[in-house]
Image 1: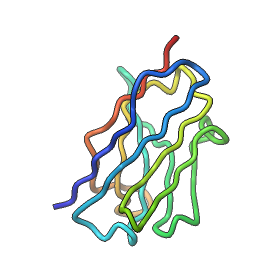
Image 2 (image 1 turned 60 degrees about the vertical axis):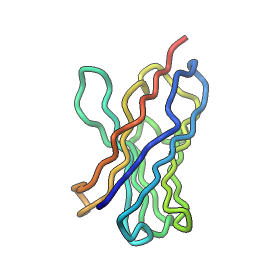
Image 3 (image 1 turned 180 degrees about the horizontal axis):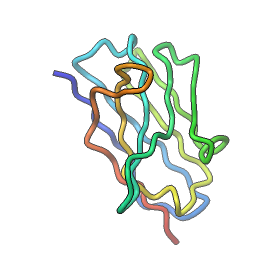
Length: 118
């Protein structure tokens, strides 16, 4: 059974930082491209970032480029998202997910809440 478990969310002031983690099990993590997706209150799902299986190629939503960094440790079966210079509009539930194809995701975690507020 594939399990993705996010952690690291919390309440942070604007300009602050958080590091999200996603622990994966039940899959060959080192062969899977992975993504972070978020959902703000009352809004739809929004793709944030993707990393290839080896960790060499990354993609970001324009509004988070230069502020967020996706990475992975295949030895630890863990995906990360470093969030810096946080803005109130970054407030959302953040989910990690496994890529199935270039444009679809097949497994999701339960999410971790990030709230940016003064």
